[in-house]
Image 1 (cartoon, helix red, strand yellow):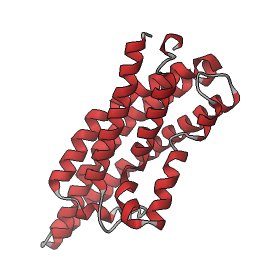
Image 2 (tube, helix red, strand yellow):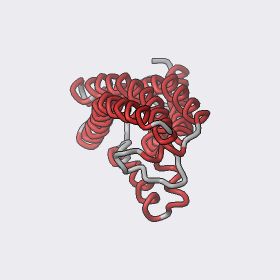
Image 3 (spheres, helix red, strand yellow):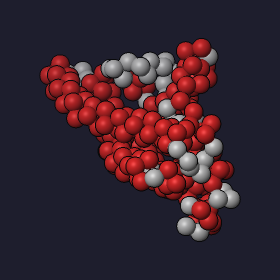
Amino acid sequence: MSTLNCRIAGLLAVLAAILLSIADISFLYSPKGGYESEEMLFLLDIPLWRLKLGHFLGVFILPFYLFGYWIVYRALKPAGRWFSLPIFWIITYGLIVGAVMHGSIAMYAILMQEHEAAANVEIGKVLSQLMKISLDLFEPFQATTFLSFGLTAIWYSVAVFFKQTLLPRWMAFLNTILLQAPIVAAYFLIPSIGNILMPAAMNIAHVVFFVLITIHTWNKSARL
């Protein structure tokens, strides 16, 4: 892989993570918070223009994460096939399902808002049933996406810590799950900041992760 291509891939991944952070904040941020609620009532506060922005930006940009994870795969390649290639395939699958998951949230939010505004009882019942069906269809995508991202993060940390890779061992402690910890802490301890960042915690973690990966492979491109 040429030095230029490697660097471009890393920078594209960082840019994608920044745009996806913007998408999630546009899509999900509510001054009331409550993101941990299973009912997702915070979606009632999101205007249509923000739903559209987050919807399209997220679906069209998410595949660009593959540029970053391709660099991760190449950086882990010295650890052996079983510590590098599965990570790429797992996250590829997760990104495909994740795009579907992301694309299904807007319709659920619209149904929820229309249900809240419905003046007719019968229409309200129909919308309530449609919301239930929509949520039932959404949840398997959500679980699969979270599982694939979680498994990828753990596999990455094991490879970097226990095997020989192109990355320093301390980066094993900076996977995309652990990098969310400061944001989660801020959500509960400093709500004025955490409430804004929490919806985009995963993607903000990826901004930091891809920046670190790009920095540590910037001058090692010939070995990737």
